[in-house]
Structures are given as C-alpha cells and as structure tokens.
Amino acid sequence: MSLSDAAFPDEPSAYELLSWYAEMGVTEALDETPHNHFAEPAPLPAERGGRPALRPLPGRAPVAVRPMAAAATASDEATLGAQALAREARTLEELKAALATFEGCALKATAKNLVFADGNPEGRVMMVGEAPGADEDRVGLPFVGRSGQLLDRMLAAIGLSRKEHVYIANLLPWRPPGNRTPTPQEVAICLPFIQRQIELADPDILVCVGAPSAQGLLGFKGIMASRGRWVEYDTGSRRIRAIATLHPAYLLRRPLDKRLAWRDLRALKAALDGKN
Ligand code: URA
Image 1 (cartoon, rainbow, N blue to C red):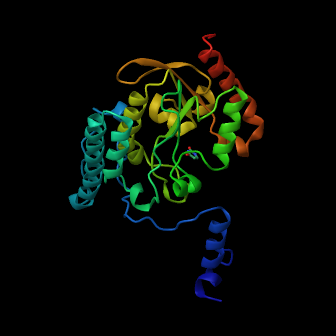
Image 2: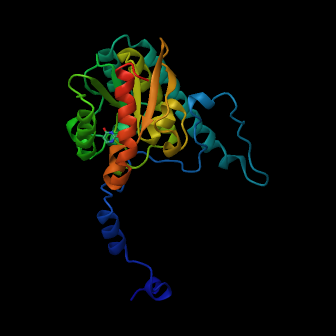
Image 3: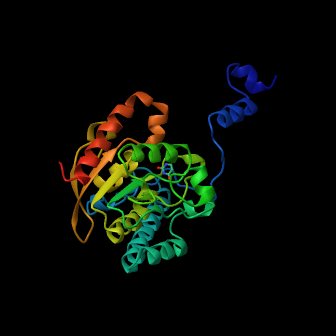
C-alpha cells in the first residue's frame, strides 16, 4: 500500500480512475494546445463592447495578469480573422475552402476532418447542431451517427428528407476532443463562419438543434424554456424565421421528451405549409 493509499483509503488508483473515464466514454486525454483555464472567456460578438480592462489584482505581481490578457487577445484576433475570411466568401464552396485554410481554432488540430455540411443547400430549412461527434469527424459529414439517424427519422415524420429539403451544418465544424462542450472562445471564433453559411444558404427557416446552437445563434439561454418559440433571425441579407428544438442526442437519453420535439416539428411543418 502506498503512502497516499494509506492516507486516503477511499481514493481510486490511477488505473481505476482511467478505467472509469473510459467507461464514461472519454476517448481522448490530451489536447494538442495548452489552455489557460484562468483566462477571461472571450465575449460572444453580441456582448462585445463592454469588456472591462484587465487590471492586476491588489498584491499580485502584474506578470500573473499578462498571460491572461495575451490569451484573450489571441482569441479576439482569431475571431476577427474568422470574420474577415467569412465575409470574403461569396459562395458556400468558397466558405468551405476558407474554413479549410483557417488556423485560428485549436479544434482543427485534434479533428480528423472538417465537417462543413450535408443535405440540400437549396432546401427551405437549415438545421444547425452543436459540433461533430466521433462518427461525423471520421466521415466528414454532420449528423451521421446515432443522433443523426434519429434526426432523419424525425424529419421523415413530417415528410422532409435531408437529401431534398434540409441543409444541415453545425455551430462548430470541428469535433471537440472527447465530445466535450465547446468553450465560449471556440464558439466565438467559429460563429462568423456559421453565420455566413446561413446567409449564403439563405433558407426560409432556421432550426437550431440543441442548446449551444440556440444560444450561439439566437441568444437563447435555457433550451427547455426557449424551444418551440418562433423568433426572427437576421441573416445579414434578410430576416427569416427561426426556432430552437431539443438535440436528438438528448432525446436518445430522455425519450419521454420526444413529445416536446414532436411539437416543434409540427410547428416547423405548419410554418412550411404557411399555416402559422
Ligand atoms: N451532434 C451534433 O450536434 N452535430 C453532429 O453533427 C452530430 C452530433
């Protein structure tokens, strides 16, 4: 028995801890770039303008503050770079090519593929999920895993198919390692691309699938309270209707809530038929 086992008899061993992580579905332990977890999160573009200046805390050496400022600035610069690149793209193909050259988001380094879009870019509906999972990362297309199959069945229930009627993309085009929730910085950096993608695809209706998409694109906080509510979304070229719904990955875990998603789908169908 080691000293730490004796001191903390209930502490799991490193082996037990790793086995537990593996069982919980953690597939990656390391990221390629170091993260400053003490850095101020970069504000989303909608919140810009009021960021307080970074000040050293009383009694602390200024050197402790500088790395934080540097991290925030790097992410701001990446966001500005993303905005410029996205604005320059005049077609969806150009936007995809621009994303492929973009080096401002660290997720690219750990992802296998850029996951840009699937479905029909001419479709009247555009759906935006959160980020690719392991299956999507491997194949390079959004929503191809279990939750994607459920999404296809949900669409089929209202007579829609991704091949014909729906264009599908994600808030982030690269898989976060181990499917972790994207950080606010990653969302802010990738946001100009998905916003431009929506503008170029020019759908009649935007459906945000899941909380991060609903928050990133529509500013909704709390998916349960905001799902199923119609709002206007300004694409930059025109105003379209938008709605948020529950993510199919959540519905796979909580099948009872499918009845809520079904309400949202019926609202979508009625809107497409000009009935609401
Ligand atoms: N979940 C998402 O939000 N998007 C995908 O592409 C796959 C799973």
